[in-house]
Length: 244
Image 1 (tube, rainbow, N blue to C red):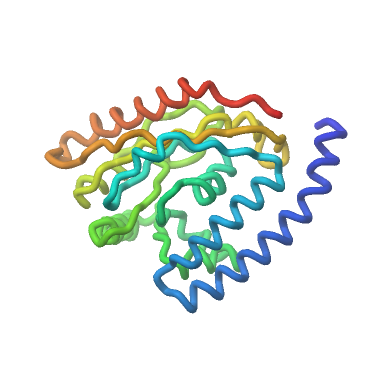
Image 2 (image 1 turned 90 degrees about the vertical axis):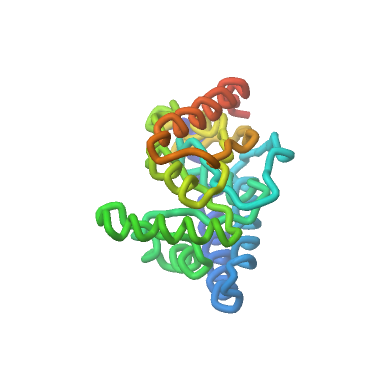
């Protein structure tokens, strides 16, 4: 790691930690006072945008007109730890995420996520995982947008891996469309995790929704691949982003 990069991280990291602690504390209080989660979501968006600007990350968003009027499942590729910040800060909808249950145990950040109505899932327990997805389907039917990473985990090299069935079974069960979301250029800014962070530009591309209506569970693999192809195509069209 270059001396310039070390200096950049050395100056920015303490400020980022202070900001995160302050915003997380405010979000936890807001989650207790406003159980709808909307206030916490707004605080989380402000925190994400502030932190990204502090770290020198510029985000551009395309396809805002493709956001549907009703609730939907938003399916995004996942290559880095910055992805959550980018989506929280710049995806122009009120949404909840499906996240690993263990994150709920993190002081402040985890507490605020849990209290504000995001949906925990225990992947090690199939019964609990199925119940969590049933809860997510109910939430979508009642008007809540849900964001998922269908790859299941971060891609180590930034390529978009196969999308797993769960997100698309969820959309079919909820009768909601899937909105493909492409995150381009993020991996270039964190090639080896957050310790390798460099300033630069990323792009969020929102594609038109892909309907789930009329699809049966037997078609879920084709549904997943259709959405994946759109995500990959938009990532390729955006061409990534060069570090600033």
